[in-house]
Image (cartoon, rainbow, N blue to C red; front, side):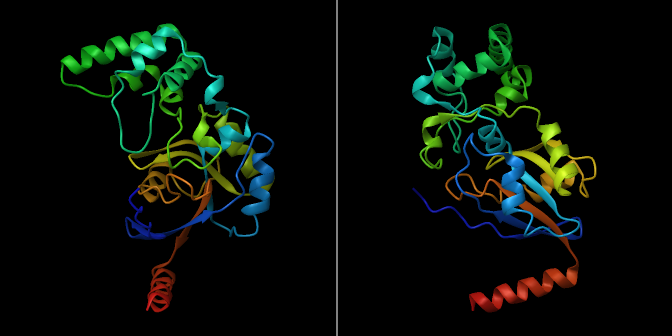
Length: 246
């Protein structure tokens, strides 16, 4: 596998500098409580004005949503439809019977069949993306196993998390840390939930995370901090980093 390019921690968006700090944790499981994980790993590093962003997949795992691949029995329709899913470079998506089966379970047979019908019409008209527009975000967020997924989740399918808005609000209320739940990969990014007192807008968060700073595979960094910086602070950081590389 080709080595993935190292992401730069500092980005500039509309004249403001932002420092992205990946937070490494143990491998999360359904036995973990997300608030306890954040209190353990994030609270010691957070500063006033920081924003915490948490992977939707990590949240779903702690909610017990991960499903072992071998325990999923795809229906006939899932086997058929999965053959027609466009393959992407960063993951499996719904291109395997097991992930398509979870899509059926998440939103129902009629919605998936209607989405597939509209997608066929859309392709004939030269459009793309109709399937997910109809099926919805819960289907788009289904994560299948890939070769670079950290074990044991290279043998699991992970659907979308439950109640992400409530979790983001709870983190802010109980831990005093503004929180965004995000769906970020190498092809796109979306903020799916944001706590009420966030110092950053949804649009700014998406722009800051545009290059997927947490990585896509085995980095074991399911969350991170966004820290606004002055020009002087950013320049000092760049000078220190340059000196260390030299």
